[in-house]
Image (cartoon, rainbow, N blue to C red; front, side):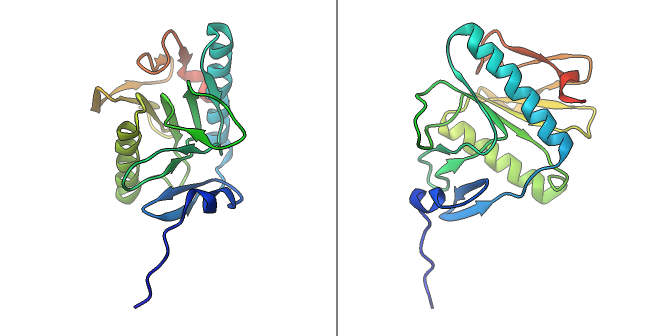
Length: 180
């Protein structure tokens, strides 16, 4: 019986495109569609404006790696994030304070729900304070899960103002801005 080698962070650096290191394997993610991409950029732009005004933290866009040290996971690559650490040429060290996961068209159904719940748990284990699950096809557009109440998200709908206060103090964003 052949034993498959565990992938490393060095292997992850050689991947072109979005990927994460989970359970010793590199997990690649396909490109997203127009609406999820639009929403990710709107969140990024809003976070960037806040970081500039506040003079602290960094808005981080899609395809940026965060290195963590969990038993089953060595990296994250959220759709958007807020990070308080140092920026270097390497992957970012540690988890973001806010991680945003915007659902793509294949992120539905029981298997997808299980994967998202596991990834949220991993984010919290790594030190993330808030995880946004953005679903542009639901009335519950933003589900804001916090590390202090991970199973009881705050739900934001259209025409409401969403926040992630625990992770990004004094930042808010109109849910309507997630849509063109």
